[in-house]
Amino acid sequence: MVLKEKIAASIPAWRERVKKLLNESGDVKVGEVTIRQVYGGMRDVESLVTDISYVDPTEGIRLRGFTIPELVEKLPRRPGDRMPLVGGLYYLLLVGEIPSLAEAFEVENEWKLRSEVPDYVYEILTMMPECTQPMTLFTQAILSLQCQSVFAQQYDAGARREDYWEYMLEDSLNLTAKLPAIAAFIYNLKFKDRKIQSVDPDLDWSANFAKMMGVQDPLYAELSRLFFIIHSDHESGNVSAHATHMVGSTLSDIYYSTSAGINGLAGPLHGRANQEALSWLKDVHEKYHGVPSREELKEFAWETLKSGQVIPGYGHAVLRKTDPRFTAQLEFGKSNFPEDPIFKLASMVYEIVPEVLIEQGKAKNPWPNVDAISGSLQQHFGIQDQDEKGMYGFYTVLFGVSRTLGVSANAVWARALGQPIERPKSLTTAMLEEIAAKERAAA
Ligand code: AMX
Image 1 (tube, rainbow, N blue to C red):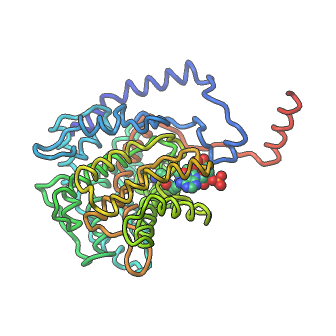
Image 2 (image 1 turned 120 degrees about the horizontal axis):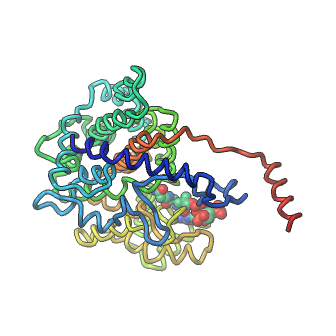
Image 3 (image 1 turned 180 degrees about the vertical axis):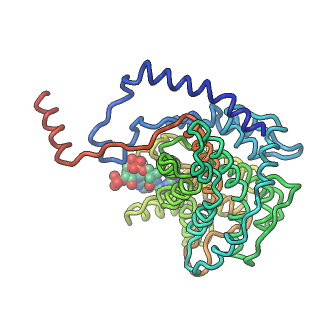
């Protein structure tokens, strides 16, 4: 497998680079931590390392050094397709180089060979009570595959530490290969005919997903490629990436660690914001019987803030400008279905809500993140997120399919570089008060 050979070839130099850095400069300070950061969710504390992606506060994400527009331009695509193959993106995340079309197809083919989901997984999902959320089903499906972990088997058989990454790669390919079928089944179970779909060997990973979702419009396969590329990775400090890494640092396998990260993604302040953003748009649409005036939209945004709620899809812990992942989706909608009423409304919210958040003066970042608009694109293709009984969020599952690409690539490299078990230190409030008092006295 070219993927494995390429990673294997680059590991010795990386191990040497990290060893040299730690030997020569291990005691050099990276930053300082304030009491506000200790109490405030460790915001901006520089204490994690990944070479797979980096988020610049004003520019946004770069995956292996490439911005979102660069990725869309440079990653290989099949002749006639508008969006690149997600297999090429996974290659880039894992290897660090833009692949050729043949190399991207190699990942796609690996996925096809590993795509069969065991029947028992479908049975478990089907047996869950009706009240089960799609994200619960998704994380259960991942965890239920744990008994197939190559890493866990090899670990028990006494594998050497330096070889761990190979088994993590096997598990990562096995897991990511199955995600389109798992996600489509969850959708069919919740919203359609409960049918299990089979993978079409002539289609790529994303087009297979689109077909299994029952969407005939070929544009949905293009949107799926874009969606799965842009949601894949966002450096290591976000909750899904960090939770996956932290659990993986105990040498838990990819199934245990990814399902932990996916549970974090299910929270409203993280991945669930995509479904909440669509609900918010639908509430506006319903209240004003269509696309409202600018004044009405402003009034609705203020009502949300005054009732103590956040405006979903806006704000970010790191970003301080419009998220380029938002812009990529906005452009997709504008060039393909600018007149879709919910998409039109999502575009209009972008013109109004930042002003309102600036006026309120609380959010450090008044600009939209990736979740502000993704639901409006999904609903255009008839993908539902809510059934008549209430909130049944499905869009976050789509985020989870993509995020698994990023967190699993990171997990392979964490093992390759022998990253240790995570164990930050906690203090008591009294200790922090004492530190603060000493600082005041010294000043
Ligand atoms: N609407 C209203 N208020 C907001 C806001 C928003 N969209 N974003 C931030 N604020 C408020 C915060 O709630 C906080 O209020 P408080 O002082 O009363 O507690 C204040 O502004 C300062 O917050 P911050 O430092 O700007 O943000 P943060 O780093 O604490 O949180 C985030 C970041 C994303 C959780 C927050 O912006 C938010 O809740 N946004 C809406 C939910 C959302 O879109 N989440 C998805 C983020 C992307 C992702 O992970 N998928």
